[in-house]
Amino acid sequence: MGRVYNFSAGPAVLPEEVLKEAAAEMLDYRGTGMSVMEMSHRSKAFEEIIQTAEQDLRDLMKIPENYKVLFLQGGASLQFAMIPMNLMKNRVADYIITGQWAKKAYQEAKIYGQANAVASSADRTFSYIPDCSDLPISENADYVYICENNTIYGTKFKTLPNTKGKPLVADVSSCFLSEPVDVTRYGVMYGGVQKNIGPAGVVIVIIREDLITEDTLPMTPTMMKYKIHADNKSLYNTPPAYGIYICGKVFQWIKAKGGLEAMKEINEKKAAILYDYLDSSSLFHGTVVKEDRSLMNVPFVTGDEAMDAEFIKAAKAAGFENLKGHRTVGGMRASIYNAMPVEGVEKLVAFMKQFEADHTK
Ligand SMILES: *Cc1c(COP(=O)(O)O)cnc(C)c1O
Image (cartoon, rainbow, N blue to C red):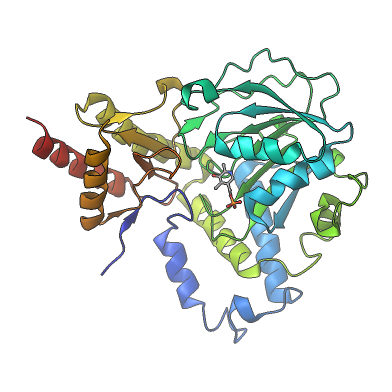
C-alpha cells in the first residue's frame, strides 16, 4: 500500500520530500557514519543542525533579535504550566476561552494563581471567536492568554485581542508557520510541532527576552525555567535531537517553497476548495461562523451521526485517513496543514461530491 492522504489533526502529515531525505540520511548522516539519533547533542554535527534550524525559523518568521527561540520537550501541554510558573509575577493572568486547549491552559494556570476567564465562546460550543477589542483586562494581569487556532473546533483569531498593554501569550500549535505573523505583537508564542512542523516530542517557544527572568514561582523545577533553557541555547540537557533535526528540514522545505507568504497563499487556496464546497453542499456543512474559520482545521457534519460514520468509513476505504472529528465533538474534521498537497484536498472534495450524489436525490 502506498501513502494515504492523512487529514489527522496531529500527529499529522509531513512533507514527503522531508521524509525521503531523512530516510536517505538514516544510516550515515553526511559522512558522520551514524544517524542523528545516535550522535552526541554536543557534537559539531548536531550543533550545526540546531543552529541552522533556529536561524531558518528566525528567517521564516522574521523573529527580532530580542526574542529567544527555545526547542523544548513536554509538548504544548507542559507550557500550560511553564507559562504561569515563569510569568505570573503578580499571580494574575487573563484567559480567553475559545476551546478545549485554552480551557486546559486556564485550568492549569489556576493551580498557580488567579486565572480569570475574561471571554469565552463556550455558549455556542466554541463555534466563533468572541469580540476581544475591549475586554475587562485585569489591571495587574501578568499576561493575556489565547489559543490562536482552535484545532478541535476549527476557529482562528483573525484579529489579535486588545491586551491593553499586557503581554500576549499564544498557543499557536496548529497554525505555526501557516502564514506570516508579526512576532512583535506577542510576549510568548509556542506550539507543539506535531501539528504543522515535525514529530511529536518537540515544542518551540518564542519568547521576548524581558519575560525571561530568574524570578519564577517557588518550587519551579529547573527543567521548567525558561532562563535555564535560554542560557543554555536549548542544550541544558539532552534535547529531542531527532525531532529538532526533522523540524529543521521542514523549515528548509518551507523556505524552498517561498516562505510563509507562499504557505499562506497555498493554504488559502486549499481551504477555499473545501469551504466553497461545504457552502454549496446539501449534505455536508461547516460548523463554525464564516469569519472565524481556520485555514488549518475544517470541521463539518451531515447532521446525521449514522451518515457521518458511513462517510468516514467510505473515505477511509478510498484512502482518506483520519477524517473523524475530535472525540469531544464528533462529526468530521479535515486538517489541511502545510504538508497536505492541494491535490489531496481536491480529491477529498471530489470524493465528497460523489458521496453526496449517492446519498441524496
Ligand atoms: C494538540 C494541541 C495541544 C496539545 O499538544 P501536546 O503536544 O499533545 O501537549 C495544545 N494546544 C493546541 C492548540 C493543540 O492543537
